[in-house]
Length: 290
Image 1 (cartoon, rainbow, N blue to C red):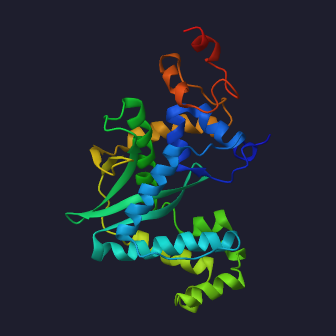
Image 2: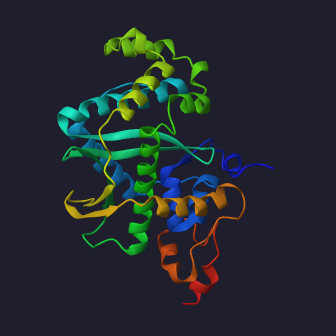
Image 3: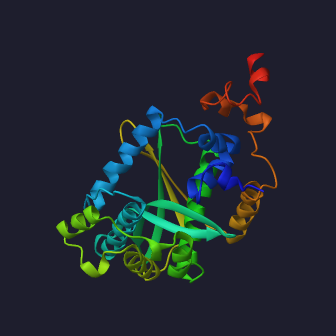
């Protein structure tokens, strides 16, 4: 039996995939089956994230030539970001790796902040207007940051670490390109760190040694045109709630059910979907009559 991951030509589940399952699981699946459409809103959101990152992180320019190079770059950037946290009190775009019931899960935390001796996880979301996000919108964002919290907790308590990462990514077999090594030399990366396994060890050591991580999670909504903060939403992480989320999403990834379209009372989401009326016609006839 072909796994769902194989059908979608994926080797891992992204935290954003898990979140998207709570917006429209069918749309999430179609993004991989037919290709994700990059909208103007997505481009604007990326631009704001890049601008915010430039406020906290020292730019590290590296041009990967192969997959090991790219993985090294992500690990190195995130390692350096974690090192800057104690002094700067905040850092951004930190990659996170983990596992859920044997599935490799990856993500990128928007921001970590030091508040009152604890580390706060913050997720940024952009909106086209200053309106408060709907319950459906905020649910997906809540699921995403809760997934990050679980992954951080797993690293902190030793449930996921270097050995798991090495086994999942086969880093012992990875070799950096000679051109990439020259780039590392140019930015004065020590020779003893020039290997995926070597930088991965530093990354996990740095993550495991950050201070206590707060159970209070922050979601910040930003106007994508003005850059103004619309709302800062705070809520408490509950492990029991995350366990229920995992049970639900795994039924899809385990192949126990097909992807779920939006329910009838959420057909309005179809108005914002590029697959509606083309690849997906679940509610097309009904909406055409209204």
